Length: 394
Image 1 (cartoon, rainbow, N blue to C red):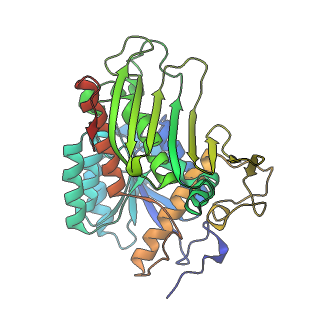
Image 2 (cartoon, helix red, strand yellow):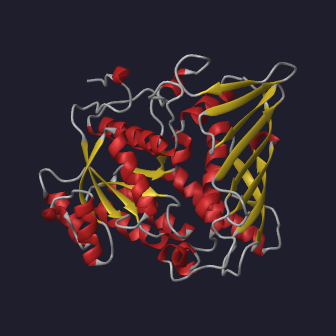
């Protein structure tokens, strides 16, 4: 048996949609809405069950919002895992959208029940907890994916393919930044979403570095195919008073002696969601800006620059065209990246269920091992800062 992929990412290759449950992400949850929107648009899943909040009333109300049947609207994730695992029509996977410190126990509960797990990044709130989760996942033999949506933009896949094809020659330097202004003022700890992100017992040793810095390093390594080997980090509070950093400057030593730099902040007034990537080689450079995700600037050495636009043809490579669904001029943005993420995860899980080997690179998702790498990055940055900005291997 093989998959017919000619219909694109949004057609279920097994002839049926997979069944998905959610833990967390219910009413009022911004991240949950991103996930849910991507799931629906992906065409690969039906959301059929959920324990959407630790508050029973909110959990039940949120389930109604998402049209989850009442008998599959749970107030306990333990009950949900047990009951869904026993149902003949039980869920194929569960998405975990809780605060970081609750990821591990929720994931282990479902893995122990034999249910595949999709976890919002970062993997957990500590490397130790993440390594323990990884052992449980390995013992269970279940599928695990971590959600880094930005690598599912069509133009990020274009940049990755161009670098792999030698369009900019040998990579010589890399720079990434993720610049926001949501934390310029003092923290409003009456907001639950703010409170847990500033509580070390819930978020871990870092706040902004874990929240958005992990996106920047993951994107940089994904596009270039080059791994960072050491970091030197300085944490700062550049906005109102906080218990943890809102800004980090991180120098990188990459493989092949490539230098790199990350600027990560949620306290740069006047910025919105500025995730930007610049990669320069000995034959040219590439630049991408998440606020203008459908364009990729290519500047070959001693030649006119080009701007590639998302779509079909016009210089788009097959790897990028697979993630492009509308003609040029019909905008695709972050919701479409989330949809591509859930499409690619869905196809990968369907292939696993049907014991089908997918050709390398046909679909891409972030496996648990890369989630662990994100945790090692967080810990290395915290270690470096606490040691006065020394170089730390990871």
